[in-house]
Amino acid sequence: MQIKLSENRYGKNAVQLSRIIRHADHHEFRQLTVNTALEGDFETAYTRGDNTKILPTDTQKNTIYALAKAHLAGAMEDFGLALAQHFTSNNPQVQRAEVTLSEHAWTHMVFDGQPHPHAYISNGTEKHTATIVQQGEAITVSSGIKDLLILKTTDSSFEHYIKDPFTTLRETSDRILATQCEATWIYSTPQQDFDTLFQRIRHTLLRTFAYHKSLSVQQTLFDMGKAVLEENPTVQEISLVMPNKHHIPFNLEQFGIENKNEVFVATDEPYGFITGRVVRE
Ligand SMILES: O=c1[nH]c(=O)c2[nH]c(=O)[nH]c2[nH]1
Image 1 (cartoon, protein in one colour):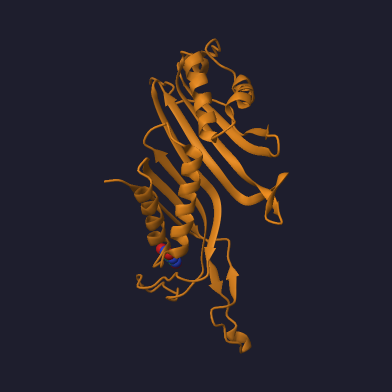
Image 2 (cartoon, rainbow, N blue to C red):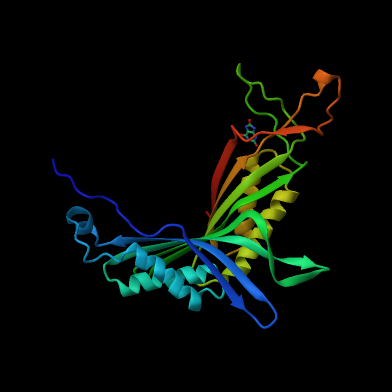
């Protein structure tokens, strides 16, 4: 029996990078988590312990900090592109470099309508994500949003589904719709105004969620993805993950109190898990 090494990659995960950009009258603050993953001519490192072609993960981590000074002034995606370019152009044994970035959403505190120059508040759990893959001259950039907690209190129903002997769920024409949305989209080329597009796509996702008359999470997911593709020609496809964070009407009748769709119990688990990829035909 012949045994051989199959797919392999290595890199540094969860590199914590914070950066201040000082302007005359205000500061910008960025907080990122970065992963690197290299693939290439590393077979003998695995099979024989030959480290001669290994760029240590410690060096990969240091490179992230070193390049942050010059390359993390604008879009996070451009920083990722600089890192992927660095790893592939300086290391001929690297055939594929993948850089994954996740940025915590900090915004300036606002007082009397004015943003404070150097004090920030977190936007909760929301993160801006990006993945850069460079393989020779071929470069792919995908961006996204993660842990975007969104909820609406009406314009959501769930009816006309299968009823079988195990069905207990009641049809509802008016329910709470809540999700922890994750969206990932792929750009058609790696040269984009990434920050402008990110803000526009985020806005489209929120607007569609808010104004959609939802017949199901599945339908809302498709509508959100469709709107992003319709409004952004440079987005090739988008994948959405929308767990259904259930809010179930609480039975107040047992206390002789009428519940007119006003009092609910939010349940963590189990939860519906709805995903979908929306593409151009
Ligand atoms: O939007 C929904 N889609 C489902 O598939 C589903 N299943 C369920 O129990 N509730 C819901 N809601």
